Length: 557
Image (cartoon, rainbow, N blue to C red; front, top):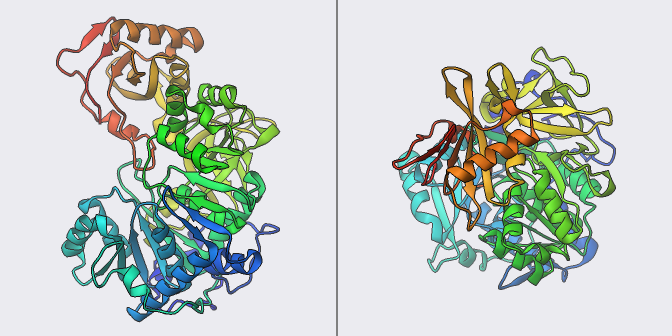
């Protein structure tokens, strides 16, 4: 990577990159080639306004609408404020806010000023913010006025000199009020395409977040691959997602992809799956991205018909059970695009759309990416043989300070931590997270395969299958089940679920323990935290036992 054209005055990110020999191989891709000087905010906003005009709707909420011209003016004014506050290119700006128009404004303004955006999940609390601040060493923080308390407390703990600027409130130093004093028009910093534009924390499925580094080039590459070539985003699209903007899945779905296409982003601060489905119908959403659990909940609430006007449904974050795919398809006629992406890769790199979809498969490599499966020695496994998913493309993993870089990047490949089977046609079939494979009595058992069978039962709303220590078998296949509304969580249901798995899969895969819980532990992005299930305490008082099955009331989280 040529750093000679860098516009960064603050070298923090450049100095925090892992050694070049530990980087993944970045593939040259036709249509994903950019000039040496590139500011992603210029491409996404200023160039879109120049191409399509100022009056097109850019942002939509349940209560307001912003045009592209209004968004550009607000971002320019905030960029002026950032410079006035002493920000220089390469500084990090932490942004703490739910999905609101001013979050989008702040992110764009940070990039316009040549700084590095660090979006944070609004649900993070003081201890988690302390960790993140210690990692990214922000020079400034912009915070929704409703979320100040935890951030200020974290600031006082670890970085007392950090300036926190609120927005959306009534204080004199409020960012919105400050920006109103500045003129429109801002000359975007001519950053290098290879300058870091954003730092993104992983969502912590293993309990310890890492921070990934992505450049201005990466931001556009995610749009010029998945969005342009799989979603085939259009100017008349209205994008929506349940994911926070701080999650790169949400950043793509609610900011990068719609602005890149000249489309509209519909923003909701929070919504249950049922509320999300209602909003989709009410506001004319055409591209919806959410997690498999949300689609299943929409089905359970009888609201799948609210999705019928949608052009594209996207699922990511967890593997999409075939039963859920088929349920949505039967109710709406829409074929869900299942995909896998990662914070390390920025967005989705395996997917399939339209007639290319094979239900139950995650799809094929997104145009611009290549993927395969490797054994533990780094050799390619044949079709039909499980292996570690390995990916290369125009984006790739670069951890801040090289934290565990050599675990994720090996031989130029990005090793995602997932076990897949690749078939003869290049489709990939998910087996499990590599560290979630259950080994019981010498058999390898993929928990998600058992979960998919359990989810075929109407009495199961959600479930997770993990291996717990067992003296006789090494690991005991254990199912944590959230019953559907109206289902009786008792020993008879546990036995029926076990028998269903036995009748559908090889008998050794059935869950020998079934524990009923109120909810499953998840990250703020909706990913199951199976490690928390493995360490949870089973056997609540009054547990009912039916043969090998255990039913437990209460929550495992």
